[in-house]
Length: 241
Image (cartoon, rainbow, N blue to C red; front, side, top):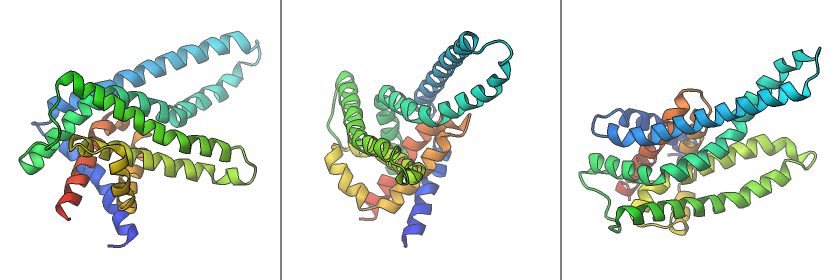
């Protein structure tokens, strides 16, 4: 199977993830990540609208009210682009223990057995999940810094939208394949070689998650669907070894 076929196969895993989270057995474990996404988005949007409206009232003089027709679309564009990275960080940080449980339940439904990882108490699971989430973001941070520099270099910055898309896809691939691998006791340094060895496949999944995360309403359900998708991908690849 060539790289393009592998990429398309990776994209299809997200569609499979959306199908899996509708299963009756998974619904209780889907609701918490879903509610986290909805609440965080509603809170951030509400605060953003309040702040922008306050700035408009303070700084736009009478007779220039037409500027609002420019400012509001720019505000929502900013929420779409910049908000993706910040909301993903916060939502996955808060939701990581619940996402690990959801991943384990998907594995149980697909294979008939729970992950054979390290047994932990609930408070240990929360600490491990949050710690792992922070380590992933330290991994992303070095690339974010590089792209911020690239984005201000004349000429080269023409490539920055494409490079940000590549980085976002990689972040999503690492993020959502981490849950099944983390449940199996694998750390980030152990996961990265596995991911790089299947780059077109995992980037297909990551790109699909990235695009779906920017679609209003659909973005609320992306996190649990992506957890299921990453788990299915990992399990299928384990079975193909």
